Image (cartoon, rainbow, N blue to C red):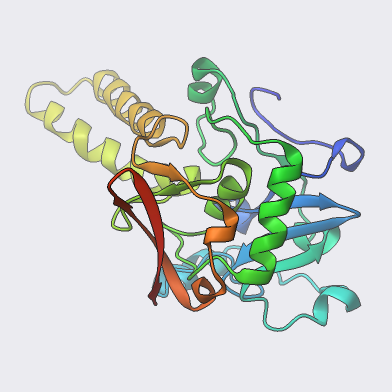
Length: 259
């Protein structure tokens, strides 16, 4: 994995890889699991609407992106593309560049990546388990799409690690969401420095430090508010409801909640 880019060629892909491609002028990346035979399983709010908040933010983000990619005949036969879908690699990339999400990276390399959503400290499960989870969820769903709590990156990370967030009120596993929230947080945290100094370098250093600390603490490999859940425990009812995980005694239960 390079310091600046996780770009890979198709020939290096293997079943179980977590891949992504940038959308909307590098504002957002769409993630999925490559399962072999030129097939990618991924989670989407709807065709051409991978960024989904239900607010005006959708219009702003989508308007900065490229024209909608024309799906191939095989992939276009799918319905509206809501939920977990299977696409060929070309349709998943939508004309973009192929990147591979990296697992088990060192803390130094993780922090060197200024942009979230490209790597994690967490350890991936074996490839055959990853493919099994993705295939299971293709048939049973992954709940309601939410850009901050349950998005395409969250789906891919779950397939790779089996980890789910315990508290539905918190941010999901997505490094992209952490980056979106971490930037404004860092700016707010550094603002009080203006009361004691006008040194722009000091304020910048503080903002960068807060941003890096928030990304590090929120990474799926460092969080303590997660639990390992087998794919078989995620029933088809999740296709119509948001995903909520609650802790009961020493065990975890997965509950479907309507959107």
